[in-house]
Length: 253
Ligand code: PGA
Image 1 (cartoon, rainbow, N blue to C red):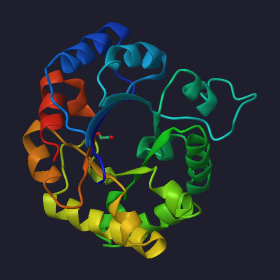
Image 2 (image 1 turned 90 degrees about the vertical axis):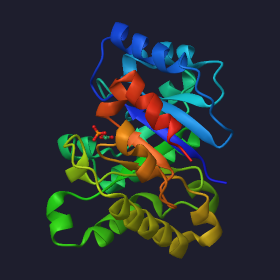
Image 3 (image 1 turned 120 degrees about the vertical axis):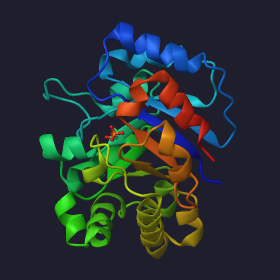
């Protein structure tokens, strides 16, 4: 059975003190996660070790990196490698967030390399995809997302793809307060699952968690997560408020 996941993406927010307090509030809120549910916190790199210590002992809570480099090591000043992440016990990493694609010109090919490196170190890539508004306006979002999946994930075999989490994040809904409707989310998630099924077979596609991202908050999480092909969310703004993110975790199926 595929996992239901609430993933927080703090982006470049929170001092260490603020982040520690936020995570403590969430961890200490008495959440009861079932075996097929988990909460993941993608924190800024300087806090990975301390955040991991804060969630330690909560079997369904994990810390994620927000990015990794697409090369193994070397002269890449300022970058973080998957070896480094593995060496500090980090088992999740966001890959290809739209902000990285846009501001750091990450290509589908580079993201394929990041996915491979993550998997080689038993780090689950949370692979982000999703279309800008211009593509949605032309109603060609299905093809656009299929190309992203194809160029970054379809070199994997059936075993490996089941170790990837996909996050569909329509760019026009990120940080804008403009959420996709539950029906729009379901439609794209079903499309993504059918694209996976064509490539890897139905049983494999059924095992892949597909998260929705884009202005998820406590008030809309239930409706979005209740869609059959939506397996939780990747949450930016609302993950910075403990009570909001707790409500989002509670909305998991
Ligand atoms: P948002 O961000 O929840 O603030 O829209 C989501 C994301 O970028 O992952």
